[in-house]
Image (cartoon, rainbow, N blue to C red; front, side, top):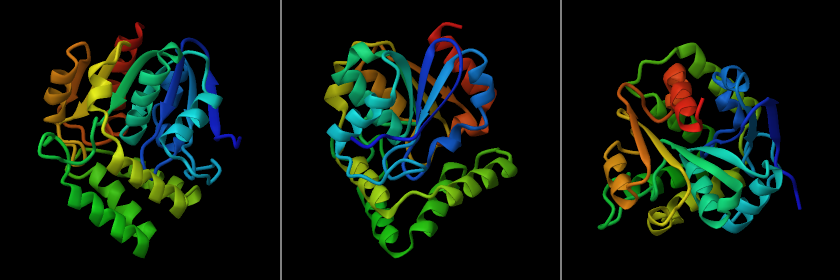
Length: 253
């Protein structure tokens, strides 16, 4: 079985960080030094993203590939698509998950008649169509949406874009990630989860609307919810100190 790229640093309770669509584990760089002072942090590059091999990854294989490189038990911190994947792991392998912290992540990424707390399905379809014409332009637009209207250091955003260019995702990896974003519907899964759960949202998020916080809590009242008022889709980039405080509070530091 091919092995996903990981980076591990620090010592302490295990944290696994899983990035979102189109990104890679370098997205966590602004907060890694602070986290590594308290935790043993394992960052994973999803298949076809960053420095991981470009392989097929339907949800079952994605789970197997991530578990193969993860600690035996950890708090899983999943951002966006990464949060959806971590939710599946928490459902199928609860013994591997001491806690689930989702960041700007939804249980269904696109709207249905019964789930309005998401982006319109045609918005994702538009991204997917544009991806075939110009993948780099789509990624730039995706990064821009994450910080639209959000107070954030432009130098940090530029570094993110440089990191993406240096370790760009494959077209195959991007396609498969989009497929998962369109297919995964974790409402029933989330409603039955029985691990410690924390969901963090940004009030200004353009990709996972903040109203998802209320509807997700309605699915499972055991989940702790926090909303960072001036954050968008990547609160750990725009509000790193607040994000780390939330991690510490959840893990118990």
